[in-house]
Image (cartoon, rainbow over the protein chains, first blue to last red):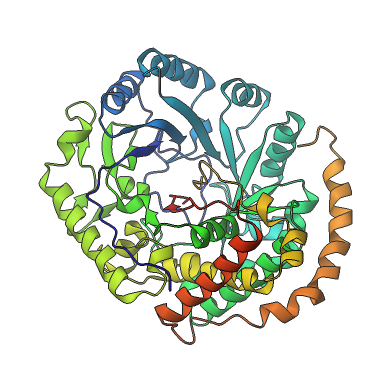
Length: 404
Length: 75
């Protein structure tokens, strides 16, 4: 039996991901969006961004590598010139030994030649939010006037391909898309999409219900994952599926998995107005009757280490730790999961100290089961070689994704 | 990625037949997996399955990575 060890979230944190909200504004109005203030055209000032850099770069939580993920609205709604200035500010302050990677998660609509050149120059990593063929995509990803955005999103795909820019697609799965694993697979391959990650329609923030929460839908989800993984296993090199890659990595790991959303300061989120949060990035925009906002401080007045002393942080941290312990006591998948996402626990159950959620059943338990079944199905050397398992499991520095 | 606008469609043409051909080949394996929605597995069973298949894999492919132990944020 595989050894089981407890996860201690108080262990020395290492900041790996800085989620930055340049603006809460989004140019479209997806039906499943969890952001409540996406009509606001507020923008992070360069002065605030300079303070973010100062607070992060002075922090003892800093590791040797940091991903700056621009998200929390549509990041491309902010002009390129702003990012050029921001990156110049960041470079002035960046410790020499620190490697910074920028990531942009976009719906693709504002993308043009200038953005493509900017991405090429900065080496930024790009995620495009596309929910598959037009009928599935346009069912939820619409403009404020109710028009579909698929055509424009696919124009972004072509533009990135024309510029030889790698990108990853994020698809949000809703109940109708669960009926379409083959059509989704064909869609990605036909359009030259090499990597896809599946998010689910979550109960989160401003989005209080989900089509996936209906009776019988988890079984549909199970069938979808099973079929999609079959397709991926049998066509190695054609399409990388984030969920399969991640689950295989977890199953092969020598050490128990820990979830960076459960460890304070492994992920730090900063809103356009300088508010600082940690744990799940979705908490940044959230409001809860028991906690209020999850802004544990502000870059204008607090260092990251000051946040640890705030009563709100300590209350949230204790409840999250209790939730991890509840998972550890009750869940057979804990060693390969690390305790689930705090934001999903809170939004589904009202508490951080809950254990199982719809989110974890779908994105952890079912995915782990099917990844393991795939390995068991390919249980002899010749078959494994045919499936190119080694190339499938190349270590990845970062498989974080966000949805725009 | 390709600079050729029509290349993705050419890839797709090949993939359609591949997908169709693969459907039957993998059906047998898929039926072997269990559904946790219907019956919660116990940890011992899942853990034992992982150990069996990982040990087998490592004997075949000793260079397989061992370090994927961080569940990264991806929402």
